[in-house]
Image 1 (cartoon, rainbow, N blue to C red):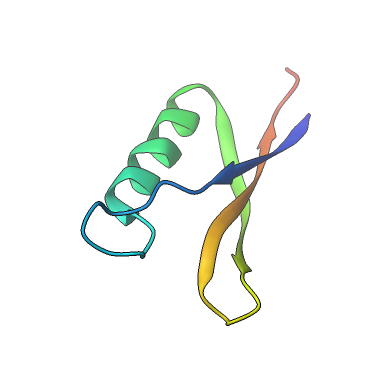
Image 2 (image 1 turned 90 degrees about the vertical axis):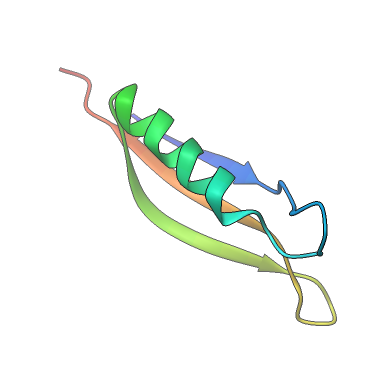
Length: 61
């Protein structure tokens, strides 16, 4: 089974993505049996990263 999750939590003081929170989310998914297959940045027209798409996979067994 696979699913795509969008992560767009930003740091309070800047417009950058909050990588600490992203790492916490990845750890949460790993603990639930999901495995991150791919991380894809989503950029705005001005080339700023607005969010990240995570492709997750979970074994059906």
